[in-house]
Amino acid sequence: MRAAWIADAAGGDLSIRVGDTPEPPHANDRLLVNVDAVGLTFAEPTWVTNGTMDLPDGSKRPLPVIIGHEFAGRVAHVDSATEGFSVGDRVVGLIDFWRNGAAAELASVLPSEVTRLPDTVTAIDACTLPIGALTAWQALFDFARLKEGETVLIHGGAGAVGTFAIQIAKGAGARVVATARGPEAIALCRELGADIAIDTKASRFEDEAGHVDVVFDTVGHDLLERSWQFVRPGARLVTISGEAEDAPSPERAKQLGIEASWFIVKPDAAQLAEIVGWVADGAIAVQVDRTYRLEEAREAFLEAGERAKRGKTVLTV
Image 1 (tube, rainbow, N blue to C red):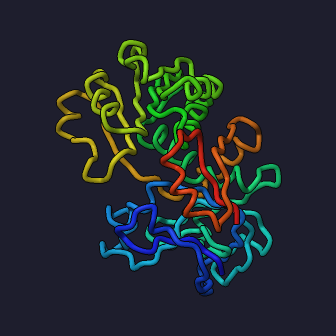
Image 2: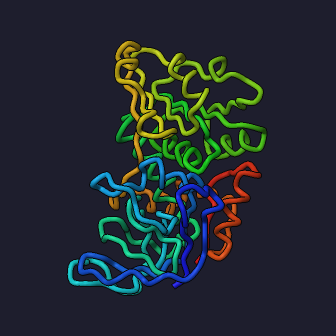
Image 3: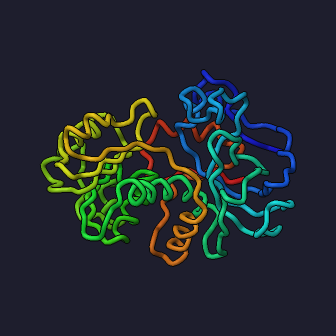
């Protein structure tokens, strides 16, 4: 089968290769899925060395590693321990990061990693949900425990996660303040429902955001550090930027009287099913930045650093 993979640990985006590789073997607890579309995460080449792709025992993944862990497709094979699914079912899901991804003609997935996809949601739209929307969902509800009537500050509101975070927070009845860079990004944040959109190229968010109950950071660096100084006691700060070793200091959070956490999204079929329902009902709009064919995977990574991205980049298979 054709697939896109990371060929070596040191090559960065240049390490992406596309070619023929053996099909995944059958296993009694796995579904095989004919992949239609895959969402790309451009940091993925760094995961080989930073620990994200480490095996459960802590050892390093052997290379090559097939990329693209969020996907949509159709079930091609069921087995004895995959009850609830049939050949031909449309599904969307997130493969755990320490296993091979779905940028291939065929992917091996656990039934717990996927949920059914209604015909009203395209594969291209659906494959943007399992990392982008699920990350936003888990940040806002599992970690920040966002409540109706609270105010959330979302850094990176025009990005692949931020675009979903704005809409999910608004759907939960929160007041949303979003940061982004440039007039087009600011316009997108407002279109998605942000009550206040702050262009960090022109303004300091501290001067315009007002009181916030929650900070959800998808950017890191200076914005994250300044957010530590901005929040007031009782606030909750959640970040997905950096690596595990960069996680917020519990000691610093305690001194400030806030809660602070860092996390990596985890597969959750029940949460994903609810998100898919919101999309099917028109409550969440998907932002696809650009699409490439599977054979163009390397070009997609190389071109990503040359342009501002609004939403998710997708590979079609």
